[in-house]
Amino acid sequence: MLETSAEKPAPVRVISEAISEYINRLGTIWVEGELAQVNDRGSGTMLYMRLRDPSVDMYLQVVCPRAVFKAASPLPENARVVINSKVNFYTPTGSLSLNAKEIRQVGIGELLARLEHLKKVLTAEGLFAPERKKPLPFLPNKVGLICGRASAAEKDVVENARKRWPSVNFEIREVAVQGSAAVIEVSKALKELDADPDVDVIIITRGGGSFEDLLPFSDEGLVRLAASCETPIVSAIGHEQDAPLLDLVADLRASTPTDAAKRVVPDMAEELTKIRQLRDRADRRINDLVVLEMTKIAGLLQRPVMKDPLIMVSTREDALKVVVRRSWRSMDALVVRAKTEIEQIAARVRTLSPQATLDRGYAVVQRADGSIARSPKDLKSGDQLKLRLADGVALATATGESES
Image 1 (cartoon, rainbow, N blue to C red):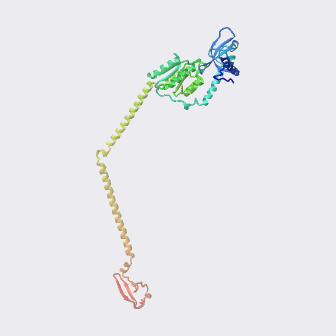
Image 2 (tube, rainbow, N blue to C red):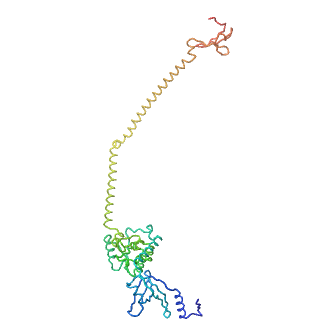
């Protein structure tokens, strides 16, 4: 390990050689990026170019033997490639570069496979889940629009939106929508519009294009940035058959720029028609209620009580009189019935009474102790007797038993 201090600093040469030695340990590596600024001077054995990361504004210098470059040709500008290279640190100038040993252009099949893998990763993280999508405002205060410079997509969105709602306001960011600068410029514009409190919805749009043209809208960094935005996002990238990953993370996917305009702002004519229809329905409903209540009032006025208010008292009076008469008749019938029953009971009681027997001429013979004599044998000569007759009691003395 190189040891230095303020008292014992290392010379630039030593530091540069240490860096070179450390980098040389890295060995051969594979690097992916986009080719930019290929400098073919027409002579010499080497070509000079830059390898760009499409997600950030970062480059690495590449030194490539002409034979290696020709073996991979044709390579268009901004071609996506992977390079097998050795990292080189040039100590005299302190510059870093890649010495290319092999260049391979990334084909569409490989790009599709990588996009499919990225799609699965982002799906597993829940970035495309329907429950995280935000609803669009009914009438946005201001619409943010990210589009190409002087593009037909911008014209489609603005004109169709203003046809539907003439007073709609736009905050427009014109950016590169394809090529090496697209991801950086679109991301910057998206951050600016999301930070603007007056922007209620953001439309990201461009016209159709090839698969490679739409690749910036499947960039992982841009997709994750869109997922983190607080403002609802409408994606209108390409046409119906195009499906960059931005469409999946956006809160709403529009098939075309024109469709995006229709989704973001309501149609004034349609809304006015709805208002008229609702007003007509409300008027009809109120009129129906008024007619119903007037019919109820007319029906109430036709009732007898409204013509003669005392009829309520008189009808109740007649009913009360009827009830009283019925009560009296019922009471009289009950009294007569009870009186008859009492007379019948009294007659039966009189019939069964000992007094009735005495009234027919019979007498009850009692001894002096009050016991009743039922047989002459129960008496002795000289016993004092009481004879209970119908009108009173007579005293007698027993003289003996009669023969007859």
